[in-house]
Length: 235
Ligand SMILES: Cc1cc2nc3c(=O)[nH]c(=O)nc-3n(C[C@H](O)[C@H](O)[C@H](O)COP(=O)(O)OP(=O)(O)OC[C@H]3O[C@@H](n4cnc5c(N)ncnc54)[C@H](O)[C@@H]3O)c2cc1C
Image 1 (cartoon, rainbow, N blue to C red):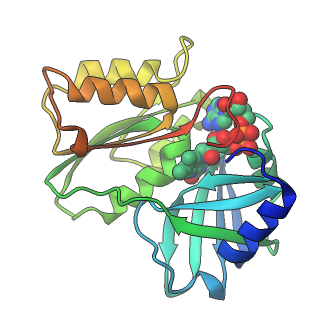
Image 2: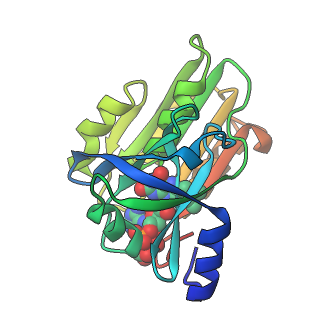
């Protein structure tokens, strides 16, 4: 979400925010941080796989994130932050430490998971938490394939978190290049459902590829969300 007047950010935090405490901060790799948030007010919320939350990361800015895991009974959510650059969201996440008090806005967003036996995931490091929560919600027998593109320093950590997916070091040609090449080379049969998230243009391109011949998926079976776009603050 772009910059808001402080008074509007105050009202949103007051009406939609739920107080929580940071209960754990784990550096997974140079570019990935896993943070746990816990609070009485996080219990009994409509958590579902792929739901989105927001944090107020500065006086006038809110940023969207995705719970990688949630426990409604304990009132706990965990988020995997990609620490790219020094935008207010990344800077805020870097400063978090155990015991900090924060406000969690949400959850909101649509329903991601589609029924069916085979599921394909493709996205970048911002989608690691999304893919973790979606894969963990699938039936045990579901067929899972897909790829995540990430800075080379984060590849090993993502392989550990998402062992059923292929993790590709990002190519010099730019965001989405490695993912697109992987899709071209590896996906010969349309899956029942596909889930795409991350760099906006790459998500669009992957969706177009999946929905055109020879794969010819129905648009409704490809669930896609742009998580960031070059030069745009806080989608
Ligand atoms: C529904 C939703 C859920 C999301 N869930 C997550 C999540 O779980 N984990 C997560 O890490 N991110 C997630 N994101 C993405 C995150 O909100 C954006 O990356 C956001 O821009 C980060 O804010 P910022 O203040 O750090 O950077 P901004 O101030 O928003 O952006 C500063 C600059 O950095 C660029 N930029 C932003 N993100 C990236 C990136 N990843 N790589 C390279 N350049 C970038 C922008 O284009 C801009 O030019 C989600 C986004 C949405 C819409």
